[in-house]
Amino acid sequence: MADRFDTTLTAEQAANAPAPSGLVAGIKSFAAGHGGAKAVIEYVGKRGARIVLVGSDGVWGDQFADDTVAARQACAKAGVTVENAWERELMDQMRPSNDLWRSMARRTMAR
Image (tube, rainbow, N blue to C red; front, side, top):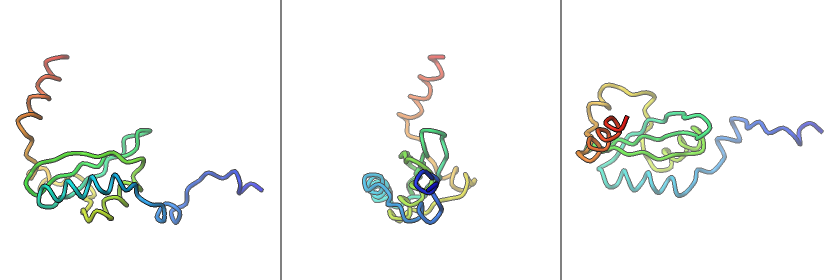
């Protein structure tokens, strides 16, 4: 009887849950447009998980998933390697655009 009210997601159920197709398509599109990509998944609390994508050309962007399991599944289906942490080589590969630098400067100046 208690099983009907159990809302705990087991590892097996999580592994079999489908990744959102729109998320997979977005990751594939980014990777295709930048000569491949690597990802770092960051847990952001109730919001879910942030997938930071770093293209082979140094351009980076992000996507959001409902949780880290969905993020990992979407990256796997899109063929993007997930790094376990921000390694020095990956950070050195990132090249922020001039627009990003300007937007960060505006945020700093607005404080």
